[in-house]
Amino acid sequence: MSKTWKEKSTRLLKQARSFLFVVLVVLSFRSSIADWNDVPTGSMKPSIMEGDRIFVNKLAYDLKVPFTTWHLAQWDNPVRGEVVVFYSPQDGMRLVKRVIGVPGDVLELRDNKLFVNGATAQYQPINATAAQEIMRQMGQTATATVLATESLNGQTHPVMVMPYIYNEKREFGPVTVPPGKFFMMGDNRDNSNDSRYYGPVDRGEIVGRASSIVLSLDPRHSYKPRWDRFFTSLP
Image (cartoon, rainbow, N blue to C red; front, side, top):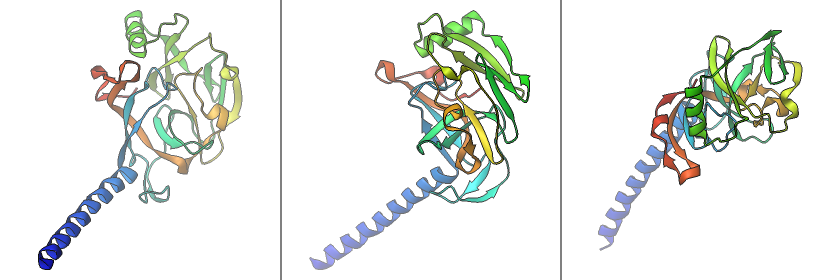
């Protein structure tokens, strides 16, 4: 009887070790190579919506020691227009925003229009059909919401402003991005807690590049899948 119990215990211990090893490998992979990030707020609308789960490439810029922000190697840096995940200098929370300024850039907002090194970003209205579809996906009914495309560093992405919301940060700067830091902003310019409030983000706090939406669940409708957003690239 004792021998049988001992054999069972040994077998269970081996299975537990195997399970823990698999868990450690998976967590290490997510920590330093690739991960996903749930998006609970609308600060990146219309590009990213509440309930989107985005893919994060943690090898886009560097290789880190698993479970830390220590760099083993670095081969690239974020550029203007990319969407990145980082730890907020305000409270350490993991956030997703768009890179608006890199070290040395002089940034300014004038009535929500972005100027980088004295040159204005290019804006174009979104056509009515596309705008209606975006509004439908967001569940947005306020007719005062303004949608446009913003061209930054050769990349074009949608932005939105809500003139009916008070926001003192529609006028901002000029500010110069310090060495080793990056200036982040949400695409939802009137409803985003970003570098306008907590300042530029240290390079070492950037987790990786967000490149696509893996899946999307609508929290407004009992987390119903938004199938048309599954496996779509981020602008």
